[in-house]
Length: 486
Image (cartoon, rainbow, N blue to C red; front, side, top):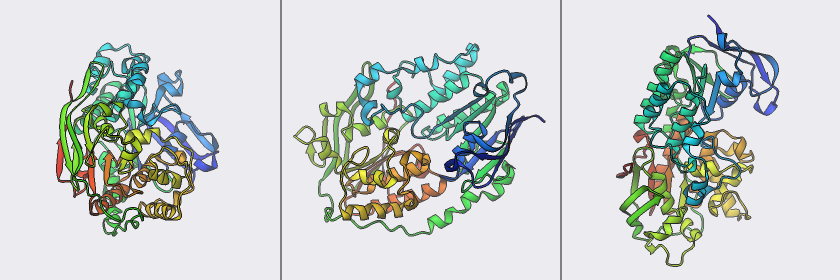
């Protein structure tokens, strides 16, 4: 049997990205692999090593693509990571850019990006577009896509080029349930009809689809031996650790001095006949929604239904929010308050926020920036604030990261820090847009337990968005469902 990718006793030259033990890895013809591990265990580093992106100090990396050996390795192996940078963020990206209609009109559209990929099989292209719903997105600017739509676009771009090995990191996060199932079916068709071999990088056993044949598990920057998926299912070491998280009592940091009493407002959010339009596209049409003090809401709907857009209106990140009939904390929007007056009551985490955080600053500074609602930290903290930041780092189990650069952490580690950032000022309204994106199964359990403990404090109101109903905290008891306006 031909070995497509082989790495024998590989040791990376970069000491900061080197595994604790030499890496031995192989992909044989006909195999489809899952690389699974906890946040920070080395999954991404492993993929970068076996694809030749990291220089090897020791070991041998080789490829055998048979008749396609004449093509560049970058043509035979296509790799994309679906972390919360979404593959499109740059140093020029700013947090509110997605909601600025002028910027969106000037940016590239889906049709422009996909048009750069060569595809001679028009039938395959049409079927691919139909499966992923691409036709409905073709005229949309890239920065106007929802997180799920953006993932679909990147997957389509990769598949159009007919690679021999397709590597997808965290491909299912951000996709609604029908889209996740369609993606599995699409990958199965690729395997059956296009002789493509798949490597999926995932954090949870339930994200391993039926077509996977073998598993590599990473732990503490070490690569385990390859085993069959059946062998892995018999041990599932990741799942076995959940009990330790579930049995742990969550202790939240003490309230800051300025939060001596809970919020007394009656209407935390009141939206009346709110409509959001971009050109000829109506995203939200005459929506009415009232959220009372202390209520716990889930906001749901398919990809592209406008969930993140609606939240951008509440948080005053969308320029159209100032032309709408909106009341927050019993104060009507436009009555003289600034954006900072609004934000000081709100804790928020979202894919857009994660996407904009390309800051090479220590992890502790990321958490502390939540006091001032800034992308980065530009003020000196009080002793009480510093103590609270340390408390939240401890609560989320990331104290060891406090002095490490945010951009050098894994996507899951970054998300835990952004959750701590959202909670550090003890907000009256906590808005969580896909908060568990990129988290492994243990960190999901920890984060959900923390959210539930926070929700039990007096006067706390929550809006929670997820495509995974099983991830909802138990305190959520009200639901608003949005529909697409196609």
